[in-house]
Image 1 (cartoon, rainbow, N blue to C red):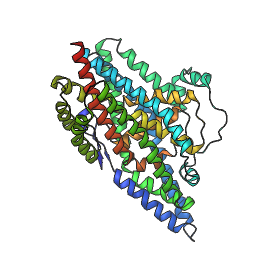
Image 2: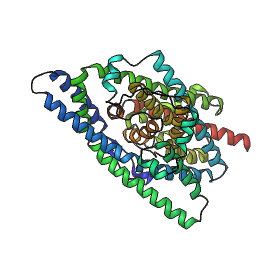
Image 3: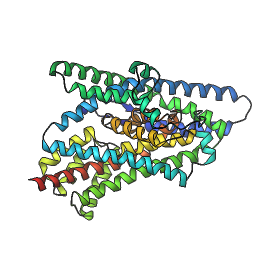
Image 4: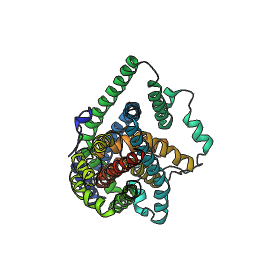
Length: 419
């Protein structure tokens, strides 16, 4: 079971990731074995309804949670950037890596899906009933108009995620220009909103094994084993985006941080051992501090930049979250214009600053839903994809800890050059 540490001030959330994965497998087996048998149809229908109800509960929490997290996350980042030259260098490096990661994924994942298409049977199996008529691909004018609605409350009520996220980011920026007392009151309110909504999401995710079991039984009865190959294909494609971020982070350590490849790899091995076993950047922090010292990073730099990175920087998030949303688009036949992909990159960047150090499954819900909604992609497939998130989450954590240490080394080297 994955945990979120309460060290960040947010409530501890327990996510039954392994149990959810086992429920997925069990549901597929039950649905496949008993499909077409007399008397199974009512069970299949009830299981499908149960899964749909759980998905609706999950959707119910996304919008208010994202608003609270974006306001507090952007405020955190701006406060960190105002903490001196070292903080500004670190935050600028974080921003550059996050924007690169999201943009890279917007190019790479569609290319991979064209070269290695989703298996035909898996498209029908995993679309979750969210398949759409391709229709007209939205252009720049439509995306721009969607970004600036005449009524933000109406946009929120209609589930228009892009303008809501942009408005929340602007609101956080505006909070920096008002007096300290009202600013603190506003930020306390939004932090409390995010905390309360995370508790509700935690409750819903505790029911994930039941909801996913219902969806998997219904899916297995309709499609047999077709979905299994699709899920394996999904894991490989999304993990590939995370792998590129990991390799790019190594390049940052070598080129900007001026650390030898052998020394960097040797220093990172203990970090990877902790990261794989815990799937948590926060739990890997002591190992990352030790790795930075082995690489000759100044202690003052490592002690400041690494905790900051764990708090506000997840290098793989934009890449892998964009990858999931794009995969869902291909599953449902949703067309993606360059402008829609650009909107996704923007939301992926903003949300990545706002999802604190959450377990992979919880981060998946908080981050991918808004990106998909901003791109006009149905989120129904996410209910099944979340069940296997514990596997791509290993790549997320490996990429994140690599980026954390690499950026710390790069910031330290630039600091030496400026000294």
